[in-house]
Length: 334
Image 1: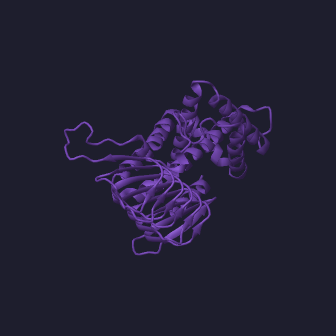
Image 2 (image 1 turned 120 degrees about the vertical axis):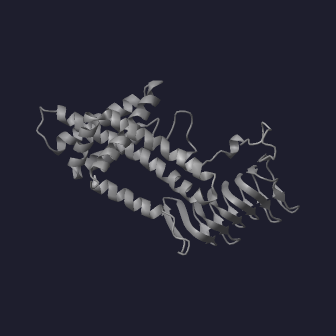
Image 3 (image 1 turned 180 degrees about the vertical axis):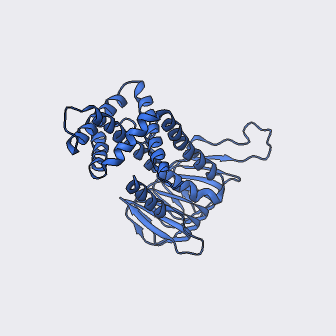
């Protein structure tokens, strides 16, 4: 388990916000590029999507983002080219460049400069109407939501559906769905492979997860529910404070990883419990891997059941996250 906790610790260090007096940090995950720091200036091409958070974020006219851009900060200025959609959560936003997709803005004020060229729709939620220069071109529709002065007005605080917090990682979520729900056989094989790798390299960790699940499943469920539902709540609460926007971004990046870790953990725990039932086979790697295979198949079949599939997925993820947290807590010095 210490190996898993070490990996998560390194991940947190990688995405943690830097001090205000330090240089911005940059890292890449697949075709996505991430920036974090106090003052961020992007003046080059980004071959993929872009996510940036900081006090001030500026995309100069030399910048070109091939995919979508998600920016959070106090002051945001975009003068370059965005090949996909542009999402801005900031106090003040200035768009004076080209956006080939849609624009979504949440903050205090929004300005479109004379060189703004928006090919898609614009939706924004601000304290005042957006300022649009006569030279700006917006080909799509404009949808706005404004803070109103009269608190007695039923529409004093109305957030249009299009302005609800969104990130590319969650764009596929619908209804009961969440990262991992509707797990395909290919996805099940992937998670089973990860669980099998851990069972082969660190067999004691799978056994500890199995013992935790067998001895205190209710406590694992409670811990998992607290983490699973608590992280998004904290992220949403932080979103409404400018200083908390970097924290929101970190939580949005961390939450899917927690869910995926829960899926792997529940496969390890179930696999360890199945392993104990295979008494007709000598204990060892083959028996542990057989338990992982059986656990993976059972989980995939359970998730695929109509109506109950969503509940089974949710319960499995909650228990997996909780078991992982309980095992990690037991390793902390008393």
